Image 1 (cartoon, helix red, strand yellow):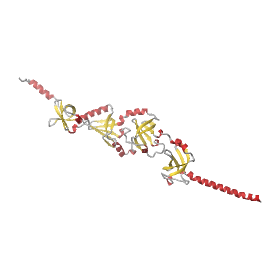
Image 2 (cartoon, rainbow, N blue to C red; image 1 turned 120 degrees about the vertical axis):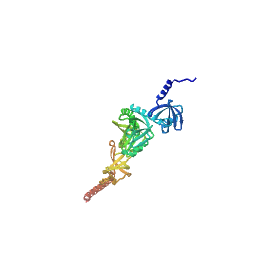
Image 3 (cartoon, rainbow, N blue to C red; image 1 turned 135 degrees about the horizontal axis):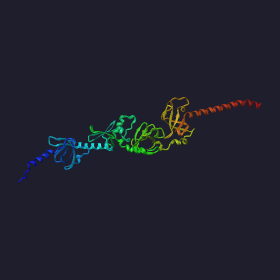
Length: 394
């Protein structure tokens, strides 16, 4: 005989079914994959309802769909209640976004460092997007190695430098979070702050450090090392005259520099002090009174610089170029001219070798004048001697 169910038991069963709450929009639910077809996933939600994930909602930053198979457990975000087909509308993308937001919020609250990848750039900084959450790293928040050092803060050149960083991974800290608008402000500089403080605390004047060229501008070369960045001023690049810092390195080159100054966060570096000062040998090589030959490589209102060797330039002051009064060295000389000059001063401590063209042209005149004076004296003596000689004969 069939078992009879009492009226009261049936009522309890029906009451239990009606008390089962269906998933509501905004919830995260767990379920089991029933089947996968192309870009559609059917999910059993605790035996209470069937959910469907389809279209763009099946795509998330982790490519979850590629690894799913029937029977796998999956978490999804409820977008809508039952649709016309009787399915709860779910989203992997939104579920991953919620998890990502949770991860970002925890990182923000705990000041944790996270890894992100830039996928766009504008002149203000780098942009990225993770599960629909937009992030921005302002130029001012980039670490020294990535900060776009360009002449005159040229916006076009800044953008070119930033575009080269697209696709790179960055270690950053979240310095501002706005869930309502789905935006984050990130800082690479903040992520390196602890490392920078430790490195700066250990740094002392006179240290030799190895780094990477992070910027080349008209007034010098920036070098990044240990989370820090210092400037090799144009006057500290080489012992000789430096016209273009770009002649002494390229972005990304590895270099060795010496720390010559620390003023708060400002670090001064030198490349030239790691090589022997050629001016210390100048007094031995260039003797006062000797004649040297070189090429004019720079003209200034006060004189002409002559390249004597790879490190040493001599100066012919405007008053030592020609005999007549000269106001502009360019009236007589031009860059590239080969000239001979006399060494008239050597001051190694001042990094100065004084030269004179005038001294060479005046010497022959002095010799000629001296010869004429001697000849005249001889002639005068002869005239005085004539009467005496005549009287003697008589």
